[in-house]
Length: 129
Image (cartoon, rainbow, N blue to C red; front, side, top):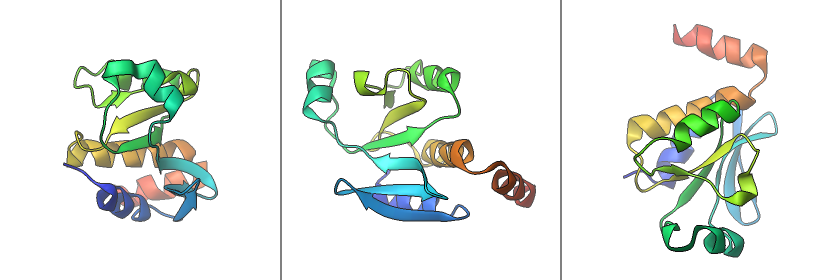
């Protein structure tokens, strides 16, 4: 089971990432661009999801584009979901207590790649090879 310490470690391990607090919740940004964040469900989310609303911690994560978003949402594990608030937005919500370590790392890194400047992305990917 993943937790906020895992998200923090993964996010801050990426170049030029900073942790901030917004609306009382942790957020991680690369050059002032939000890529993953703590996203508790709001009243409107709970109303929209009804009985399907998860109870554990929720991570918001940017994705590269809407096609990537739809691919994650099609995953049958139920780890990834959305609410009407995010309609048309390249983001997904992640049930943090259900995601495995490898999948969490992929979500955080892919979110970072989607938001980091191209030159920083190239440098990061070149250093990984």
